[in-house]
Image (tube, rainbow over all chains, first blue to last red; front, top):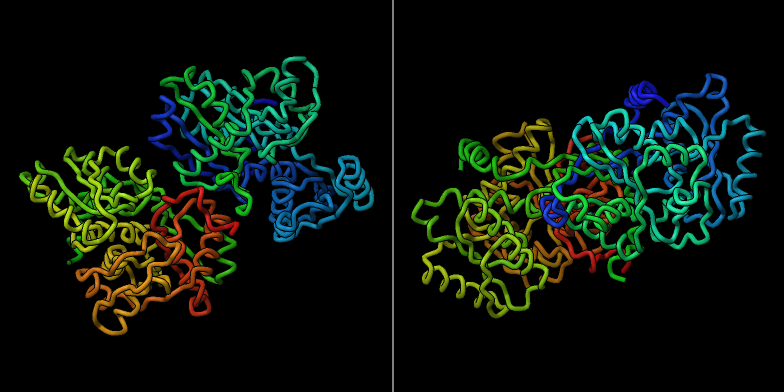
Length: 313
Length: 313
């Protein structure tokens, strides 16, 4: 994927997404001893950066494909994003969700007029159900992250951040399936000025960290993290980009995630997901390495269950 | 207070405050059937609109007064605001706080280099202690809301909102001591285009509502509300402005406050105080009266204890 691909992607999706704000906090800067710029995708449509990739993937379909719609399996932010992107572009979206997905997530998808198909709560059942829908309806399968058009879309958040702050030394993102960090790494390469990308990952789902160590894609043995957006498996399209362009991945504990989340909520006054806090937690963990640097942090989203916050545990 | 006073106030304090953003939510607009613009003072310095009034009050002091500093009694947002405004303007601030004030509030004041003087947790003790400090140090007493310079400062939030959205039909604010709503009413009068100001007040501290009914300042028999910023007595400088320029005050229940707060957090993705939600709650309560109108809501602040959120109660 070249610089021109990212430029065209951004032009393509711009009418359908928000140019999200970049926030700062004097107090967080004092704690870190550096200058931090938070790119706030919690203010993005559907409350997460996923809207960027979903919109780009749909817009790259042929007219014939568009007529038959799209299908994905997700119970998270990508389900909402694909539903809304499809709605805005006038095509059908089929969303395969596990039968035990929270009602609030189903309602959100319905709110964007996505067609929900329930399946057993296993990865095999999800994949098979999506395949069936794809065959039956002729709908094109769009993977939540293992897709070059999705990766390019997610990269536009970093592009916007660098347009506002061109001289960032570092950018931190969370790492789940790898769509956000792969897109970010490409944008940093093409639009940054010697800008280094570092990932944050929970110890509890450290497949990307271990994959970088071993050189092959490793599996997660546990997904026991509060960062629900990151409980997924690294994609094989994302991995080589990460290998080539991401400096390293820093692992953080659950306590470090909650501590970073608290700092974001208390100081930036924004509602953001635990997954978002993983990027700041990674930065804080090694803050002495970043004194006086200019640092971007991608706040990935803000869809959080207010009834299950971790602060008073 | 004239239009020119507000214009000069805004010019005076502008270098020391943030021009806070105005946010919207498609979903909240759909629920209400109107177009809402939220003026987000939770992003203001010290996390609340109080920074505006505190800054203006200090800047209106004589050079001699400035040399001797300022004193106030507050355990809330005004304590932090006066401390930071004084710090930025290079003068001393003495903050009288009840001995049982939460440590987090004392720490916040100390963070802005305010000098804390503790006293017994009664209103009489607070007032007497502030008087003693004023006499001993020669510091000028600045009231958190019953002060024309404070009222003018608070009015600049509405002025900024109207500069961005000049054709608002209504503006809602919460009502505590009356500084914010009095300043807002003056700004709406001078800078609005037939713009009506309505207040929201908890049933549990409805002194302003009852004062408007009776024509004299009434006292609160209870202060048993989650909206901690509003647990104060209406000021006699604020009352006549409210009588003359505020259309009405709508009272809301504690449940309505929490429901509005949840909507703000979930949809606008911002951390804001229960007091802020009172303005939206008042609007929602009579939403059928505001169909297709353009409505401003002042989000007063975002200083909230994350360990004591009302959502999972």
